[in-house]
Image (cartoon, rainbow, N blue to C red; front, side, top):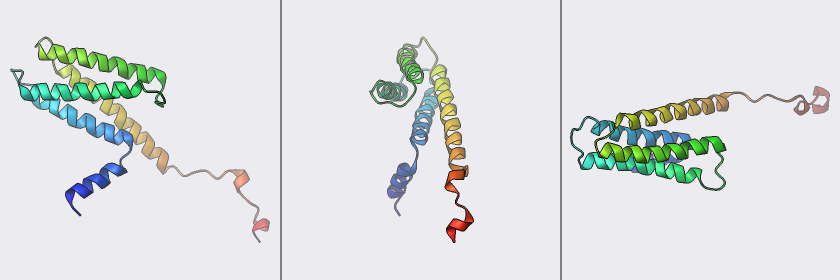
Length: 141
């Protein structure tokens, strides 16, 4: 099996929260790699832009009709997206630290990891047999 085929199989088996976690991890790692640079070079611009675009997509998704997230959570994500955009511009101007962007992403990743753990536990719990589903032994004979 080729590596690309393996990647496709892995991605199709992932839950949405796992895909989101992986994306946040990749973007956050890009931010960490450029964090200690003294100049705002192409790699820093690309990392900041990638982070801003990721948040923009999340915000757009929260604004679409039919999004199943609670309204308060959607509003919070949209607000964070606006903040990320403004803060990224300030980082590019040298007025703010990239650390705040990294910390926000890490916080979101922690929430996604907790959500994945809860989903895993729920899928492992045995389902209870309800009394109405049980039939007396006499009726089986």
